[in-house]
Image (cartoon, rainbow over all chains, first blue to last red; front, side, top):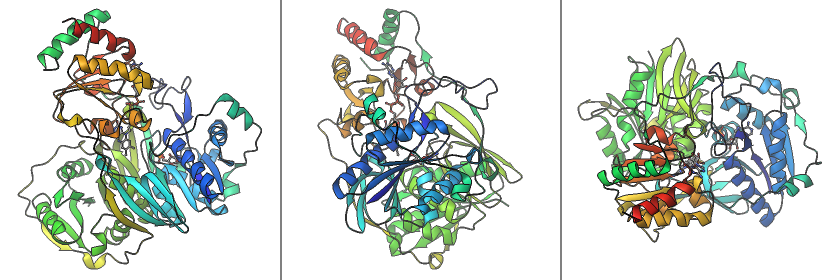
Length: 259
Length: 322
Ligand SMILES: Cc1cc2nc3c(=O)[nH]c(=O)nc-3n(C[C@H](O)[C@H](O)[C@H](O)COP(=O)(O)OP(=O)(O)OC[C@H]3O[C@@H](n4cnc5c(N)ncnc54)[C@H](O)[C@@H]3O)c2cc1C
Ligand SMILES: Nc1ncnc2c1ncn2[C@@H]1O[C@H](COP(=O)(O)O)[C@@H](O)[C@H]1O
């Protein structure tokens, strides 16, 4: 089975305190720690496990800048066979549809049975997978947390509200967006990354792919600025030494029925 | 005039709460817009929801087809693409169905797309201004959405004030005949219910809830000791379950349990909307987080900026000494 997994390099929410830049139109990106989108790691792990069972190849692809190569290499260190970097100044400022159109162009150059994305990335949109499926006219299921592979069909479980699972049968090829918890992504150490350091990762531009109308000019949805919402009546912050804080907290917990 | 269509999600013949929230969202898009509810499905449940919606919306579209009895997004999308005018604004909930349906619908309708909108700031010409969040709620953004050829948007449940229903006296238009070819390459099979766990966190008045800030499986003991001291139960956010450190039945959130405790201790939890979506009944929320900018502090009643691995043992000791 030929599987393509779309991955994205994103600011790591667990590692960063986000600040706005001076102009307030972007994050202060100088010291941000980036990593592969959490959901994409689960997608790559799932793809590797499927290929281990039924044979085939896992290809990871990203739309990004030169630095995005590092996330492709990381996923190749996990066990993905190939990596492709789609990179061009003309891609900058693309909205979700722009990204999906770029990925679609690459997908049509190959022959994939299964295409996977993460359920969502740093922008919390969860849009690229569903758009890709519609553009490719393939069936789609989002928030997938179980996959059983058959011959020309697969059975997938979707996580729905309350932790219930919706089972579906889908024809191949199809697009799935993967939810966390579907598996336990393998650990990748420095040594693993070193092993794939020399592997060739082709870089493709807009003209290689033959895509137009993407990037900022083609985007119908645009981010104007970032802001941190007014705290309003946010939390009362307890201050002082740890002992003082604990004393105040215990009083409040007693009053509210916590003790 | 701006035309807005709102897709009504429902279960067992009862519309989800967001059915009362779309009218407020629509007003914030355009005070003078026309707003139509769209209800798809089959049989008695559908009829019941359509009837209920006539109390809230002045126009209701009903689409009855056996293929729509279960809301399989690949099927519903086909029907909607034939029924909704291509240049209209289409709203649906940012829930597991909306996420499944809407991005692809925006492609099929060749409309702009915006996900998980939490506020609208009106239309200027053909540009709609909306507010969203990114990075797990750490930052908000203003977006411009070109609505010249329509827009499909998901809105976050609970973000718009619910309206009073009951008296709209709406009229129903049956568009079942317009649904078109509903064959699909995805077939719904069944629902598998979530497993019941060893403890029922929904029954506890006090929850000590841990998130990724607990850092390591071995540290869970520290939370258990605090819970014991407080006669509470340990619950958690999703990453703790994903890592298989605690059972799924302990997860609080939209894809886990809905809890209504008196006191909720959020320990090393950032405060994503999917997590907070499971915390109901307006409990007293205490948040301990080492990041002073963590979004949880916007919703907590009391906040402490400390490392939970140091703070929890000290709090446990102090409580045990009382
Ligand atoms: C469809 C869908 C459904 C979802 N359903 C749920 C759900 O039901 N429940 C749920 O919880 N999530 C759910 N999620 C995931 C959700 O989006 C977040 O990813 C998740 O809630 C984050 O969990 P967290 O706050 O524990 O982790 P993080 O966001 O990583 O936050 C960890 C926090 O701990 C702090 N911290 C780190 N170390 C320490 C320390 N030593 N001391 C003090 N503080 C520390 C950090 O500053 C940070 O604020 C869902 C996502 C999707 C897409
Ligand atoms: N720039 C990108 N390159 C490759 N894949 C992407 C990119 N942006 C988003 N995706 C994929 O789409 C998924 C959902 O992201 P989003 O729709 O942005 O929330 C991600 O988990 C990725 O699999």
